[in-house]
Length: 279
Image (cartoon, rainbow, N blue to C red; front, top):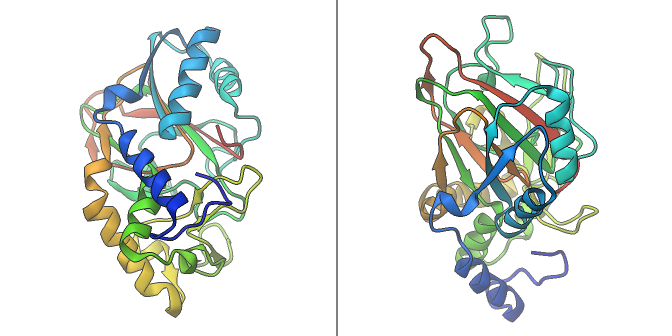
Protein backbone atom coordinates (compact mmCIF):
# COMPACT_ATOMS: atom_id res chain seq x y z
CA UNK A 1 0.00 0.00 0.00
CA UNK A 2 1.50 3.30 -1.07
CA UNK A 3 0.97 7.05 -0.81
CA UNK A 4 -0.26 7.81 -4.33
CA UNK A 5 -3.17 5.35 -4.17
CA UNK A 6 -6.64 6.94 -4.28
CA UNK A 7 -8.21 5.95 -0.97
CA UNK A 8 -11.92 5.77 -1.73
CA UNK A 9 -14.27 2.81 -1.88
CA UNK A 10 -15.07 3.47 -5.57
CA UNK A 11 -11.45 3.79 -6.68
CA UNK A 12 -10.49 1.03 -9.12
CA UNK A 13 -6.92 1.17 -7.86
CA UNK A 14 -7.97 0.82 -4.21
CA UNK A 15 -10.44 -1.99 -4.93
CA UNK A 16 -7.78 -3.89 -6.86
CA UNK A 17 -5.41 -3.55 -3.90
CA UNK A 18 -8.17 -4.51 -1.44
CA UNK A 19 -8.94 -7.69 -3.38
CA UNK A 20 -5.27 -8.64 -3.55
CA UNK A 21 -4.85 -7.92 0.18
CA UNK A 22 -7.80 -10.19 0.96
CA UNK A 23 -6.36 -13.01 -1.16
CA UNK A 24 -3.09 -12.82 0.76
CA UNK A 25 -4.53 -12.74 4.29
CA UNK A 26 -2.78 -15.44 6.36
CA UNK A 27 -5.19 -18.24 7.20
CA UNK A 28 -3.24 -19.40 10.23
CA UNK A 29 -0.28 -18.37 12.33
CA UNK A 30 2.04 -20.88 10.63
CA UNK A 31 2.16 -18.68 7.54
CA UNK A 32 4.02 -16.09 9.63
CA UNK A 33 6.43 -18.60 11.20
CA UNK A 34 10.06 -18.81 10.07
CA UNK A 35 12.41 -21.40 11.55
CA UNK A 36 16.00 -20.28 12.14
CA UNK A 37 18.79 -22.49 13.41
CA UNK A 38 20.77 -20.05 15.55
CA UNK A 39 19.66 -16.52 16.39
CA UNK A 40 23.26 -15.71 17.32
CA UNK A 41 24.37 -16.39 13.74
CA UNK A 42 21.41 -16.14 11.38
CA UNK A 43 21.96 -17.41 7.84
CA UNK A 44 21.46 -15.21 4.78
CA UNK A 45 18.69 -17.50 3.54
CA UNK A 46 16.89 -17.23 6.89
CA UNK A 47 17.14 -13.43 6.83
CA UNK A 48 15.72 -13.42 3.30
CA UNK A 49 12.77 -15.57 4.40
CA UNK A 50 12.04 -13.27 7.35
CA UNK A 51 12.12 -10.20 5.08
CA UNK A 52 9.86 -11.93 2.56
CA UNK A 53 7.33 -12.77 5.29
CA UNK A 54 7.32 -9.21 6.65
CA UNK A 55 6.92 -7.86 3.12
CA UNK A 56 3.82 -10.02 2.68
CA UNK A 57 2.18 -9.62 6.09
CA UNK A 58 3.95 -6.71 7.87
CA UNK A 59 4.80 -9.30 10.52
CA UNK A 60 6.93 -12.39 11.08
CA UNK A 61 7.28 -14.88 13.93
CA UNK A 62 10.64 -16.59 14.17
CA UNK A 63 11.73 -19.63 16.18
CA UNK A 64 15.39 -20.30 16.96
CA UNK A 65 16.74 -23.74 17.85
CA UNK A 66 19.54 -22.19 19.88
CA UNK A 67 19.21 -19.82 22.84
CA UNK A 68 20.21 -16.17 22.53
CA UNK A 69 23.64 -15.69 24.10
CA UNK A 70 23.82 -11.90 24.34
CA UNK A 71 21.94 -8.68 23.71
CA UNK A 72 24.58 -7.67 21.17
CA UNK A 73 23.69 -10.76 19.12
CA UNK A 74 20.04 -9.71 19.17
CA UNK A 75 20.98 -6.23 17.96
CA UNK A 76 23.10 -7.72 15.18
CA UNK A 77 20.12 -9.86 14.18
CA UNK A 78 17.65 -6.97 13.90
CA UNK A 79 20.21 -4.85 12.07
CA UNK A 80 20.44 -7.59 9.44
CA UNK A 81 16.65 -7.31 9.01
CA UNK A 82 16.73 -3.51 8.63
CA UNK A 83 16.68 -1.80 12.03
CA UNK A 84 19.38 0.85 12.40
CA UNK A 85 18.27 3.52 14.88
CA UNK A 86 16.41 2.76 18.07
CA UNK A 87 13.96 4.22 20.54
CA UNK A 88 15.41 4.33 24.05
CA UNK A 89 12.45 4.28 26.42
CA UNK A 90 12.22 6.07 29.76
CA UNK A 91 12.42 2.95 31.92
CA UNK A 92 15.44 1.06 30.59
CA UNK A 93 17.19 3.95 28.79
CA UNK A 94 18.76 1.48 26.37
CA UNK A 95 18.16 0.04 22.93
CA UNK A 96 16.76 -3.17 24.45
CA UNK A 97 13.95 -3.09 27.01
CA UNK A 98 13.26 -5.99 29.35
CA UNK A 99 9.49 -6.49 29.49
CA UNK A 100 8.70 -8.32 32.71
CA UNK A 101 6.58 -7.58 35.81
CA UNK A 102 8.36 -5.11 38.10
CA UNK A 103 7.74 -4.20 41.72
CA UNK A 104 8.85 -0.58 41.39
CA UNK A 105 7.34 2.86 41.20
CA UNK A 106 6.94 2.25 37.46
CA UNK A 107 4.64 -0.73 37.99
CA UNK A 108 1.63 1.36 36.91
CA UNK A 109 3.06 1.35 33.37
CA UNK A 110 1.03 -1.58 32.05
CA UNK A 111 3.63 -3.27 29.77
CA UNK A 112 5.70 -3.90 32.92
CA UNK A 113 2.85 -5.64 34.74
CA UNK A 114 0.95 -8.87 34.16
CA UNK A 115 -2.18 -7.02 33.02
CA UNK A 116 -3.78 -7.26 29.59
CA UNK A 117 -2.81 -4.73 26.92
CA UNK A 118 -5.56 -3.60 24.56
CA UNK A 119 -5.06 -2.98 20.84
CA UNK A 120 -2.40 -0.34 20.18
CA UNK A 121 0.60 0.56 18.05
CA UNK A 122 3.93 1.22 19.72
CA UNK A 123 4.96 4.82 20.33
CA UNK A 124 1.62 6.33 19.34
CA UNK A 125 2.24 8.89 22.11
CA UNK A 126 5.73 9.89 20.89
CA UNK A 127 6.56 12.76 18.59
CA UNK A 128 8.94 10.59 16.56
CA UNK A 129 7.30 7.61 14.84
CA UNK A 130 8.13 4.00 15.64
CA UNK A 131 8.07 2.05 12.36
CA UNK A 132 9.08 -1.41 13.56
CA UNK A 133 9.57 -3.47 16.69
CA UNK A 134 10.76 -6.83 17.93
CA UNK A 135 9.71 -8.94 20.90
CA UNK A 136 12.02 -11.83 21.80
CA UNK A 137 10.94 -14.40 24.38
CA UNK A 138 13.44 -15.34 27.09
CA UNK A 139 10.81 -17.08 29.24
CA UNK A 140 7.06 -17.41 28.75
CA UNK A 141 4.27 -17.09 31.30
CA UNK A 142 2.99 -20.23 32.96
CA UNK A 143 -0.54 -19.17 32.06
CA UNK A 144 -1.76 -16.59 29.53
CA UNK A 145 0.35 -13.83 28.03
CA UNK A 146 -0.58 -14.52 24.42
CA UNK A 147 0.09 -11.75 21.92
CA UNK A 148 -2.59 -10.86 19.39
CA UNK A 149 -1.72 -9.27 16.06
CA UNK A 150 -3.59 -7.35 13.36
CA UNK A 151 -2.14 -5.92 10.14
CA UNK A 152 -2.94 -2.20 10.15
CA UNK A 153 -3.37 -2.25 6.37
CA UNK A 154 -6.36 -4.56 6.86
CA UNK A 155 -7.84 -2.08 9.34
CA UNK A 156 -7.57 0.74 6.80
CA UNK A 157 -9.04 -1.52 4.13
CA UNK A 158 -12.07 -2.37 6.25
CA UNK A 159 -12.62 1.25 7.26
CA UNK A 160 -12.60 2.56 3.69
CA UNK A 161 -14.87 -0.22 2.40
CA UNK A 162 -17.43 0.65 5.09
CA UNK A 163 -17.02 4.41 5.50
CA UNK A 164 -15.29 5.62 2.34
CA UNK A 165 -13.82 8.90 3.66
CA UNK A 166 -10.53 8.23 5.44
CA UNK A 167 -9.25 11.81 5.31
CA UNK A 168 -10.55 12.76 8.74
CA UNK A 169 -8.40 10.02 10.32
CA UNK A 170 -5.36 11.21 8.34
CA UNK A 171 -5.59 14.72 9.75
CA UNK A 172 -2.68 15.71 12.01
CA UNK A 173 -5.18 16.68 14.70
CA UNK A 174 -7.35 13.55 14.55
CA UNK A 175 -5.85 11.96 17.66
CA UNK A 176 -5.06 13.79 20.87
CA UNK A 177 -2.73 12.18 23.42
CA UNK A 178 -3.21 13.82 26.83
CA UNK A 179 -0.12 15.12 28.60
CA UNK A 180 1.71 12.68 30.86
CA UNK A 181 2.45 13.91 34.36
CA UNK A 182 4.69 10.88 34.99
CA UNK A 183 7.06 11.60 32.09
CA UNK A 184 6.43 15.35 31.64
CA UNK A 185 5.38 14.69 28.06
CA UNK A 186 3.13 17.48 26.73
CA UNK A 187 -0.19 16.91 24.98
CA UNK A 188 0.31 15.63 21.43
CA UNK A 189 -1.99 15.99 18.42
CA UNK A 190 -1.36 13.55 15.61
CA UNK A 191 -2.80 11.43 12.80
CA UNK A 192 -4.19 7.90 13.04
CA UNK A 193 -3.31 6.88 9.48
CA UNK A 194 -0.56 8.49 7.42
CA UNK A 195 1.60 7.99 4.34
CA UNK A 196 3.64 11.13 5.02
CA UNK A 197 6.91 9.37 5.75
CA UNK A 198 10.12 8.62 3.89
CA UNK A 199 8.79 5.16 2.93
CA UNK A 200 5.46 6.50 1.58
CA UNK A 201 3.90 3.46 3.27
CA UNK A 202 1.02 3.30 5.72
CA UNK A 203 1.83 4.17 9.32
CA UNK A 204 -0.72 4.02 12.13
CA UNK A 205 -0.89 5.64 15.57
CA UNK A 206 -3.62 4.32 17.82
CA UNK A 207 -4.67 2.88 21.16
CA UNK A 208 -7.99 1.41 22.27
CA UNK A 209 -7.37 2.52 25.86
CA UNK A 210 -9.84 5.31 26.65
CA UNK A 211 -7.56 7.01 29.19
CA UNK A 212 -4.69 7.23 26.71
CA UNK A 213 -6.35 9.01 23.80
CA UNK A 214 -8.87 11.71 23.04
CA UNK A 215 -10.08 13.13 19.76
CA UNK A 216 -11.13 16.43 18.37
CA UNK A 217 -14.88 16.86 17.93
CA UNK A 218 -14.63 16.42 14.17
CA UNK A 219 -12.86 13.05 14.41
CA UNK A 220 -14.69 11.55 17.40
CA UNK A 221 -17.41 9.81 15.37
CA UNK A 222 -14.85 8.42 12.93
CA UNK A 223 -12.74 7.07 15.81
CA UNK A 224 -15.82 5.39 17.31
CA UNK A 225 -16.46 3.71 13.95
CA UNK A 226 -12.80 2.70 13.72
CA UNK A 227 -12.92 1.04 17.14
CA UNK A 228 -16.02 -0.94 16.17
CA UNK A 229 -14.35 -2.08 12.96
CA UNK A 230 -11.24 -3.25 14.83
CA UNK A 231 -13.31 -5.21 17.35
CA UNK A 232 -15.92 -6.64 14.97
CA UNK A 233 -15.06 -6.69 11.27
CA UNK A 234 -11.31 -7.17 11.79
CA UNK A 235 -11.69 -9.94 14.37
CA UNK A 236 -11.54 -12.54 11.60
CA UNK A 237 -8.11 -11.24 10.56
CA UNK A 238 -6.43 -11.08 13.97
CA UNK A 239 -4.00 -13.82 14.95
CA UNK A 240 -3.15 -14.93 18.48
CA UNK A 241 0.13 -16.55 19.46
CA UNK A 242 1.92 -17.35 22.70
CA UNK A 243 5.66 -16.98 22.32
CA UNK A 244 7.82 -19.78 23.66
CA UNK A 245 11.43 -19.47 24.72
CA UNK A 246 13.74 -18.54 21.80
CA UNK A 247 10.84 -17.30 19.68
CA UNK A 248 10.08 -13.74 18.67
CA UNK A 249 7.92 -11.36 16.66
CA UNK A 250 9.09 -8.74 14.14
CA UNK A 251 6.57 -6.25 12.72
CA UNK A 252 6.15 -2.97 10.87
CA UNK A 253 4.43 -1.66 14.01
CA UNK A 254 1.10 -3.33 13.34
CA UNK A 255 -1.77 -3.23 15.82
CA UNK A 256 -1.15 -5.64 18.67
CA UNK A 257 -2.12 -6.46 22.23
CA UNK A 258 -1.51 -8.93 25.03
CA UNK A 259 -3.61 -11.15 27.25
CA UNK A 260 -3.11 -10.97 31.01
CA UNK A 261 -0.92 -13.69 32.48
CA UNK A 262 0.21 -15.53 35.58
CA UNK A 263 3.74 -16.59 36.43
CA UNK A 264 4.92 -19.57 38.40
CA UNK A 265 8.55 -19.75 39.53
CA UNK A 266 9.98 -17.90 36.54
CA UNK A 267 8.55 -14.55 35.41
CA UNK A 268 7.49 -13.98 31.82
CA UNK A 269 10.39 -12.11 30.23
CA UNK A 270 10.55 -10.56 26.79
CA UNK A 271 13.21 -8.38 25.19
CA UNK A 272 11.84 -5.50 23.14
CA UNK A 273 13.52 -3.38 20.48
CA UNK A 274 11.75 -0.47 18.79
CA UNK A 275 13.16 1.18 15.68
CA UNK A 276 12.63 4.28 13.57
CA UNK A 277 13.12 2.21 10.39
CA UNK A 278 10.49 0.24 8.52
CA UNK A 279 11.42 -3.35 7.68
